[in-house]
Length: 298
Ligand SMILES: [Zn+2]
Image 1 (tube, rainbow, N blue to C red):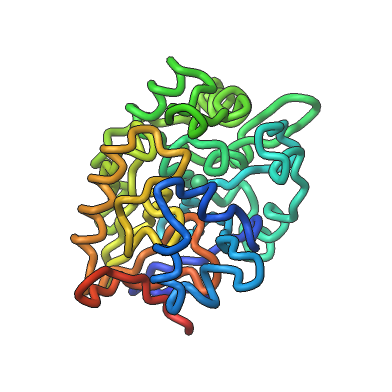
Image 2 (image 1 turned 30 degrees about the horizontal axis):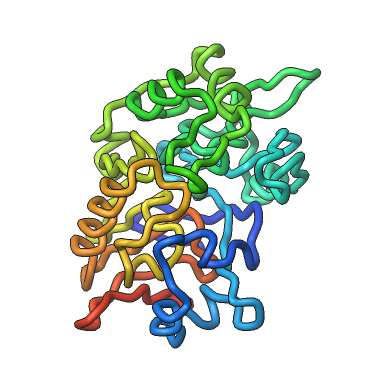
C-alpha cells in the first residue's frame, strides 16, 4: 500500500505477516464452498489463493501521522510471545520494529497507540521483552483502550467467547501485552466514541469482541475507516452474515457488520481493515445483489 494522504495526514501500513492463511471452511464456519465460488471472480487474485483455496491474509498495523501526533493503530502479534494456540504466531521473530524504524520512527516517537480490540493479534507490540520483563514498547505513548473491552478481558482472562469449536484462547495476551501498559500508567481507558482530535474519532462496533471499535478519519474532504476485525476477509462484504470463528457474539457481530457494509456501500469511505492483504485499501461497492470489495490498486 502506497502512503495515503488526507490533507496533512499520512497513513502507512506496517506489515508483520502476509500470505495464504486459514481455509474459509475453517475460519468462516457459516460459509460453504458453493457460496465462495459465487464470489470467486472478484476474490481472485488478491483475497484467495487459487491453488490451495486458502484465504490470503495479512497482519499489519497502520501508522498515522497528523503533523501533531503519530498514532499506531493495532500492534499485531509481537516478538517472543508464547502463543501455543496458534503455532504460526508462537515465539515470533519479525523485523516489525526495524520496519517502523525504516519509516523514520523510533519507539519514542509514537504518541498514541490505539487498539481496535484486545485480541492477541492486535496488542502484541504493545510490549516487548527487556531483561525478562514485558515493558511498554513505546515509552512516550498513551495507549487508548476502550473501557468496555478492557474491563471484559480483565474479568474473563483467556476465554475469547464464541461457542463450542469456535471458542479460542488468547494465550495470556492480556497479561503480557495489556496489563504491563496499565501498570506503567500509560493506558487511557476511553469511551467508544472518543475523539483523538478533530479528524480522528472512535465508533463503537461491538460483536467480534465486546468493545470492538473502529477509528474514523475525516480530513480534506476525504473519509477512511480503520475497521479492525469487523471484517476479517473481503468476502464478508458480500456476506456480512458470515462470522469468523473467533467472533464473541454471533448475532451482534452480524448486525454490526451488516450496518457497516450498508453505511459504507457506494460511499467515498476508504476501508482500512486489519487483515486485508495487498493492495489493502479499497471501497465497498454495491452491485445490486451483493456488495463486493473493490481494492484500489495504486
Ligand atoms: Zn485480528
